Length: 194
Image 1 (tube, one colour):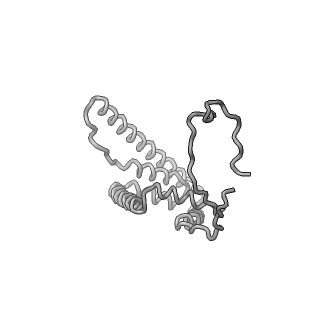
Image 2 (cartoon, helix red, strand yellow):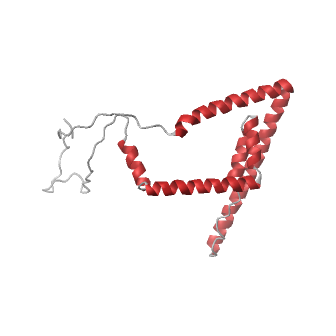
Image 3 (cartoon, helix red, strand yellow):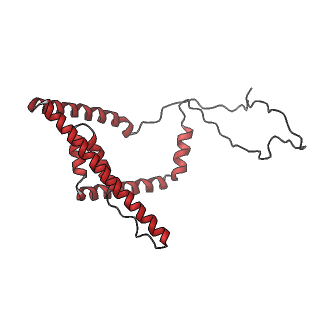
């Protein structure tokens, strides 16, 4: 033993807001979707709800297929431009990601997800949401760089283990294999802790 004492584990790290509220939000969304579907089924009929769900699935699959074809076409055009030696014209933001997300939301059973999916198919909404997402991503990158970069994030994640133990040290690799100082092969090494 080295004689060094490991400090006792005092408190759990604080949970992020996302990890706290995401399960609650998903549960509330599911309950609201089921309630709305039962409300529509009571007002019209169960067959109407079934037709709405099938229509949303079909429309969503068409949108996803169209966005996928457009993304593949953009990729092949970019690759052809690079192979021909011409500089690519730059990354075109056609909103394929938002089209796919809108299509996936349409494919999910539910009226709220269908409404959000339909809103995401509108080009001005795609541009506004894209700008907001880009600004948020850049702000988070600046915050991470100010906090010491991504290396600091991984260092913190390693040090706050659930059992509270932190082992300081370094690993020294012996690239020569199992050959001792004399050049003769050594046997198995003794265990590190006894």
